[in-house]
Image (cartoon, rainbow over all chains, first blue to last red; front, side):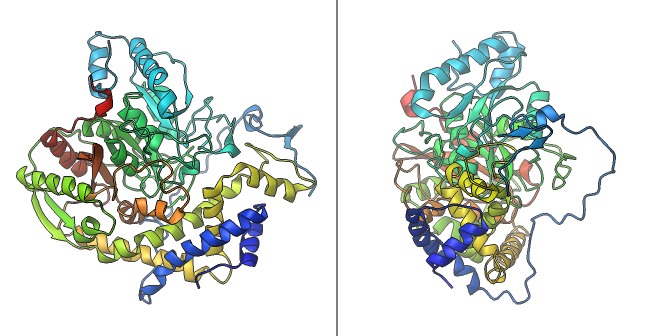
Length: 94
Length: 468
């Protein structure tokens, strides 16, 4: 299972919306292969009857009253926006 | 003359209360110290002007959102980002009268063990500036040790509070998961991230923990916390302390680290604690692998928000998708890219069960193993870091070697347990940290044991080269 191909690096980068240069693809292929070889150790244990832990506290659903509260003013919402048009975030065409 | 190198927050508070110094004089003394020593150490990414009040100053790690004060998480993708609201922990410090000195350096998105992954350049260890301060919270730890802040906030996912405190020779607490709000904190791995205090003494650390902890309606993972007891006693009679073999004998632990920790363990027994060996075989053997699947998987999801749309960097692109991909290429450094790709891979179709699903089951194994040990012990003790502070650059090109820096801090983090670093001596003139681990919500026990040990060892937390 260890080892990741060049195509897999490119596939994962596309899934993660990461543009990579050719040099980066080569570097990450080597580094990710080494890391995957190390973390594949988890497959050694017999885990047939072990449930997964998603979260260290045994919390049930945390309910809150559904009460309307003021939200951030628009000036704050757009304060860090790279581009704005009216009350919208402006982006290049899809 | 205020000696910020030696002054604890507790003493500072007393001096202000007795009107021997004013709050403004205190704040100015820290600004002077920053002006004098931070050009060499680079602990701060942003230094604040004095805010009104007489409260004790505090430094805050730059992954914690502070209203009106730039917050970058050590990343170019958040360069210039100014939060429009305070993280709950920052708000609680403010409500308590604490005055923000500045924002401290961190590995980008808290991913690293040396601060060398900061997009703004590394911090340096106050004991020896050719060495790293640890990470990711190296800025906070180095600032406290160099007298640039009386105390600080850090964040810890797999050791980012405990390990830098060990390498810089101060006290750092990673609290029990769920005790401190993450609202307004830049998210890395949400089932692991915790905010916690860094200070010169266990008492200061306990006090700051009491300020920031407790349920927050804005973070549904937080719970009510037992009242914090500021430790006073030097007597450890009745406390059962376990010495897990694997955490004390792991490959790579330096002899000087073992020597200092062993001497401290003897000291614990001398103080009246019942000390005995125990075992956590699978936690140490599988902890790192488990962590480096779960944390990157959660990071890949959390960092999806940096898309150049609502805040942060935006790069040009012919269409929306190209803009997003270019923004993330230009704005994120190598370590976040590596972890995003590793996590995306571990979560992707066909690999989910083998990697992420398996890691979550291993997490159960690690948690159960700790639960079983705590039936016989109140706290566990081991080194915090296998080594003292290492030279800048020594591990920078080898991600796996860097990951091993957290071998001893990671297992308890995966299990959601609290851990306290207490300095326990020097090896080759550099601090050695001792890690105390307890069951969930046992912070008061860790403070009690840590305080008694600190009093007995009388470690001088002022870096030797600054002593006058």
